[in-house]
Image 1 (tube, rainbow, N blue to C red):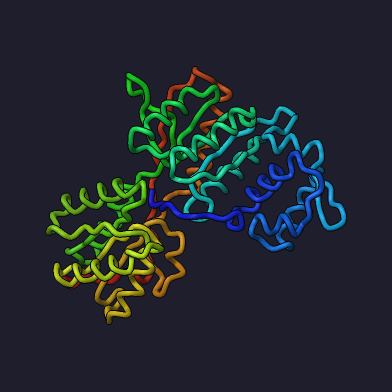
Image 2 (spheres, one colour):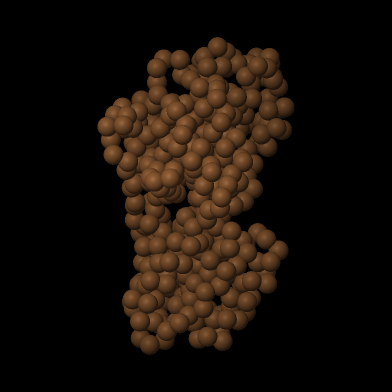
Length: 369
């Protein structure tokens, strides 16, 4: 997927994630001051009061002068149980501030519709972090099923997947696919066909008359390989001339400043008139740098971003491939609850969903039209 490792703070959490964290933080404590909670979470006291008011309305916490304390029902929820037989679906994701919020929303909404509850934990792109969060959920009896987006490359990642498939609860991989065990059995999963999304971008640019269509991929994203596969396949299928493929640092890393100029230099040397850029943040930064160097977008260079997280806010608004993030979260919950209801009677399901192209102002006619 066109996601990227990064750093998150509790202040960037979705409201539901903040409230879950608040319940866990209050567990085993007495009264905690609003000011203390705001400082620890990295949010304003107003945000904390809003979360506390919602939890108090549900009967989970009690407001006291200047603070809050946990009630019995809230303690049950902090441990991951509703106490009324409601199935709890755990979800471990590597990021809470980019790509994943819409996946989480799809899972949250669907769990609510199906009278289940989502227990969310943020991790990272590291094997140890993912395992720690999963172990907490399973060891505390917090969840009846688990949705997880683990690393899938490397020996440690393979070991993690094997461990996940041996857990005593149903496990569904989200935006990942994997096999496990000596017979290489597939693990239940739902993911985006990112290769097809990249192919969609190339075909759009080709239809606009571009023949030199390059690729920029983030060196740190777990989905760069799929995006590259789709780009290569489309370029070969359309009979396009060889175009440059550049692996770059993430936009927030010091090396990005050098890499973005390297990309633009290569475009000039190789007569590249269009780029597929993975992901949005790199695409936005690249367009800004191109304009600083006197290049017009899309007059001199057309750009398609991959993710459609912030592409529409750029200047000009960027054409982008949009993965079906909400539907990914929705489908994952359905798979988990179906497995809880049917058990081993269901075959292992591997669901693959397609992206769509959102055409905006960053792609124009190529030099041959």
